[in-house]
Image 1 (cartoon, rainbow, N blue to C red):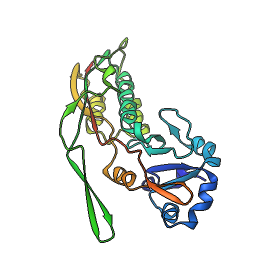
Image 2: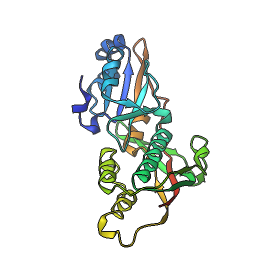
Image 3: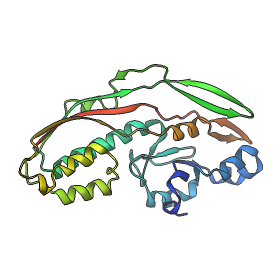
Image 4: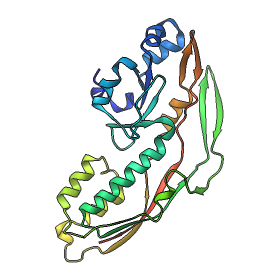
Length: 251
């Protein structure tokens, strides 16, 4: 098994399953759907170590039977346990941003605020010829989150040094952050072409990682085996919250 060669869209979700359950799946319609899915990868427990040799689980938890992992939206080599994935991905990106600032020669990086936005959304699940509409998070608000609120006011202080423009560009690419417009522009401000007017302080709100609607829909409709040929809708769902960070960088 080499999932690194599997297209990213076919391994957004990884489901760990007992080897005996895998053998029984072809005998049931729902089991056949799981086996034939182009979007969910089944990992027999006997292949857990092989999986871990190819990918990292951000929270470090060892997979057990019925563990569901979600692929990081910014790094195709990292996964997180489904129910903690949104906050784990957000925290991972936050730490990467601080390291990037260090490469750019920052003297002080302060996390001024972290909040989430819950958006009104509907999921349409097709059952036969009809659609069932389920409302999710029927409110829009900004809330502090217990998982990340301890980082509000967190300050990293560095000695300060010359920025390493080339290394910062490499860091962006290596950690799959090049698609973040603000971070890309921040690095480009350190191009030697602009050295005559260097940046001193910048404050910015940044969207941290969130999980795609497609992944959310897959999880909402995932039926998992519970033994005896029975299948039930997955009860482990990913949060649909979007995390935002307000950061102040002094150089």
